[in-house]
Length: 192
View 1 (cartoon, rainbow, N blue to C red):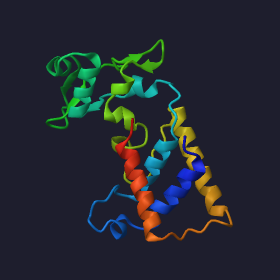
View 2 (cartoon, rainbow, N blue to C red):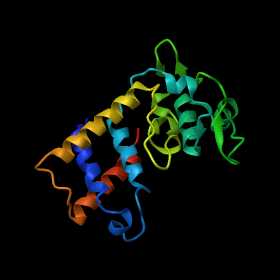
View 3 (spheres, one colour):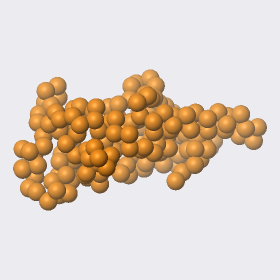
């Protein structure tokens, strides 16, 4: 587990220079400073199994690889998984959602866990901070999600502690910044 202070330091490094000045080949890992904060919160997030996201998240968007992973996990043909568990998203042509069922069909209300956790969709993997759940100008704290509240609090405290540390210098060389930005990109690439 990564410590809040380590994440705060990586965050300070990654956000000290704009992506464009570090990645000259235009392969920008993230888009905004807020995106780095979202990923930092995600790193510190620990699901407390409250079930709020599984019982209120509707619709749950699916990528093609989500459907394929779920079909493999359930050991059923892809076509059957699509037919049984998905429907077209009315607002996004060509995109599928889980069928509108609350709570999520795969949420075990007794055990308070996801029955397909290892195969869960990308949108579930990145909840509550990254992707469609964020806004452009701030990190959204989902007050009904205790893990969300705690992660934001941990990061906020760690960043403040770092900034007030007399030994902390917010000046970083370009390679250090690039490594930190790459670390955040790698986090996104390995979200499980």
